[in-house]
Image (cartoon, rainbow, N blue to C red; front, side, top):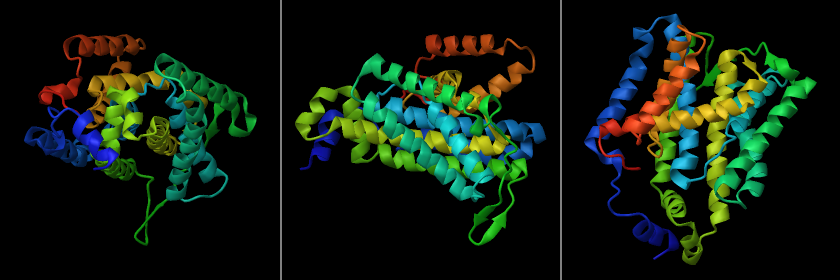
Length: 331
């Protein structure tokens, strides 16, 4: 029996059922996908614009839930990877003439490189010290980009055009918000499926074991630092993909996409949806984005209402909105 087998049998309590085989969950997932496919037909032009942005932030929240909900590593600086991916996509498309796929690939690669740099230092610490180090790194990166004129300084990189998408030998224009929406939806579903496979694998069980009892894993033959840096890079890569999609969608990359407020928002998204549930985090990202857009149309003090929503969920539904599907169990 391998060490991975030991983790699956000993470190993960048997009471945790695989929710991806539960009828209620599968029904909710199918309904979410169906609603996503029908959304452009039900929404007007502005609604599609908001929906596309909501899906992007759902992807961003998914990246954060993988890191925190699986491995228990709380990052306060996840905006560094989101914004870094946005700048990588913008530079590659505007100055290098890269294709859509290459631009997004470079967004992922740069975010992973940044994760390696910050991870090598941060994973040597635990708890709040890890969180503060990630926040400090994000703030340094934000200040650097803000004052670096070759990246547009405080204005950022403006005038980013959406390149056509090469798919099976065909050129698909992404200028339409509806087309871009479906492109983001497809990527979100694919990434979610990939993440589910990861968390259901022996590697995913090892992450859960590390979260529950990190001190035990070395005795099972695991290198916890390697596990941390691996999941940190995976999470950063997904965040970078979301950042690249966001910059291309909006037509610009700005320092604000690296700001600590973005890091705080993704934490709230994951908590509102249901930390550790994956699909719940996506749901939280979508709901908070739509909720913010609606309330901001009524008042400039919309953050007050976001705070009230967050407090309500934490007090009355601490397992997140995903908990309405029943007892929350991690997949």
